[in-house]
Amino acid sequence: SQQGEEDPQALSIQEGENATMNCSYKTSINNLQWYRQNSGRGLVHLILIRSNEREKHSGRLRVTLDTSKKSSSLLITASRAADTASYFCATDARNYGGSQGNLIFGKGTKLSVKP
Amino acid sequence: DTEVTQTPKHLVMGMTNKKSLKCEQHMGHRAMYWYKQKAKKPPELMFVYSYEKLSINESVPSRFSPECPNSSLLNLHLHALQPEDSALYLCASSQFSGVRNTIYFGEGSWLTVV
Image (tube, rainbow over all chains, first blue to last red; front, side):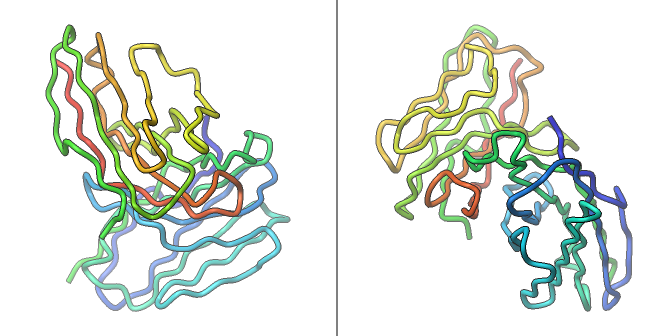
């Protein structure tokens, strides 16, 4: 079953520009995580934000969480060609048996950064 | 670089074959997972092991059989698969199974069933 929905499905920008991806979810969560996946490879964990946090930074990444709107955004500043990948949000939705730590992934945003 | 190692990276098997996917982690994690990912789709959870015991089976067909020989190893035994089972199989681990844990993924094993 699917919990998160990323928006947009695809995003193409020039190097140096900022990229913003959004994620909406349906049920209560304990935390929300963002992952990156290069084509045909494994997922790399980027950042985890807990339900009682509103914003978190890690390097060029900024994640926000609005639990009242059940949405999160991932901002990548000063993008690079190496940021080209698919980005997924994932939640440990409580109503999905999240206490076991099983992540429910959204459909993902495919980001293309052109040099 | 990921600290979750999966082998083989690519596997082609016939529908009557028996094969296994292997996963290893040396981070001392006590929870391990198998996910399946079809092309252009998000990963979907198959199994969760916690302290070497199967804790979640997401209604996966019996032609997929997981095994956790010890806290560092996780196998996925494959038998009588169908072409629609062709996908990227991702192994993952976390310190514990629980809502506060970051999950670390391997690079995946590409499976093609012919």
